[in-house]
Amino acid sequence: MRIYDIIEKKRDGKKLSFEEISFFVTEYTAERIADYQASALLMAMFINGMDMEETVALTESMAKSGDMLDLSVINGITADKHSTGGVGDKTSLIVAPICASLGIKMAKMSGRGLGHTGGTVDKLESIPGYRVSLSTKEFFEQVDKIGIALIGQTGNLAPADKKLYALRDVTATVDNKSLIASSIMSKKLAAGAKNIVLDVKCGSGAFMKNESDAAGLAELMVKIGKDCGRNTAAIITNMDIPLGTHIGNALEIKEVIDILKNRGDERLRELCITLSAEIIRLSHQIDYNKAYDMAVNALSSGMALNKFKELIEVQGGDAYVIDDPSVLPVSKCKCCVLADKNGYITDMNSQLIGESAVLLGAGREKKDDVIDYGAGIILHKKTADRVENGDMIAELFAENNAQIENAVKLFNKSYKIGDTKPPEKPLIYRTIR
Ligand code: URA
Image 1: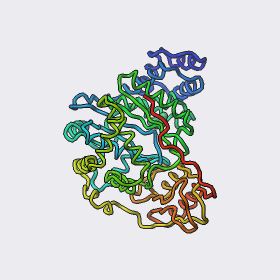
Image 2: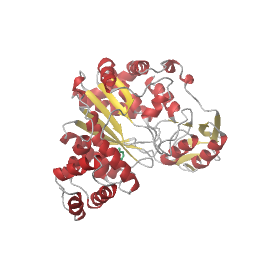
Image 3: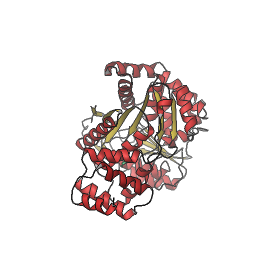
Image 4: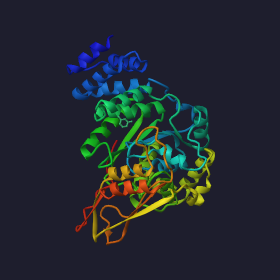
């Protein structure tokens, strides 16, 4: 087999076989295919598209390019959750303890943040002492024992995706449903859970800007998951408005603790319950309404909070943060953004708010940037809220005033105040099963 022939075939709009796609992935991972040839094939895939069989072949080949975790060594039902990325999205840190407190084994590996969306691992690292690196053996043992582990990526999961994603990022080939779906699902398959729930975001802070594109991506991922023997469902959710009120690592941990104490932002709480209910429904094969009630009860009874506390303790963190979140880091400088007229917040742009948080030091522009865990934004007003002149819209935190000045300039472009209250957008558009 020759890569030249495979590129030519896809360039001419023909369907590639499983063997051809698998050859490409294996040989590229082993560095026996050059970047320029891989780029040419990716562009041909992007322009001419891939059908379901080709997309599944690409997903499986990338999943098998490295370690495939075998979670069958863990006693019980395993589940995983994935979000396509959003601003203020701390749902994994709430959903995983809810589900684990109900006996589902949550073996979760998460990524670091890059650009305007934050990463779960960075948020966890803002808890003093919390270890995000466990060996695979420790990871399995912990999930078996307490039902939950939240760590950074370990081992060599889907290395082909890592290489191909880096190439797509610089060759304008990210934005294609088959390539995005296979990239995400290859990592989920390699991570080994039997039940997978995907939170597919749509709106200003997300990859997919409208509901129909998000639904197309979600349907594709659900089909891939099922074809590969995993129970899979996806929920399409709104990302026009940041999720919750806190953006930034330690700030988001504070908000997580608040929700686990059964209070805080209603939309965030609702989304966490919905995602948990879908995981519980799939894992226990029960009616959705029953699963929903179980998730609500896990929050109101304190079971989920206790599970989060146990997780922090076992992974070496200071569990006192649960009792007193003020021990979490907070950056030195603070600035309040005030409304300059009466009216309603008519619009908020999640992406610009996420980028403002990066300027404050809460996220990375480049892979190696160092994060300031105490930096970020607390939103006091969101879309459709009434404001009077002088009301506080947000508080911004950073280590120095130059960062604050830059971030405030950008933040001020992220919202509008008008005379008419805008209609509220739904938080959850639909579920794809
Ligand atoms: N996230 C991924 O992991 N892969 C993509 O292609 C896009 C988003």
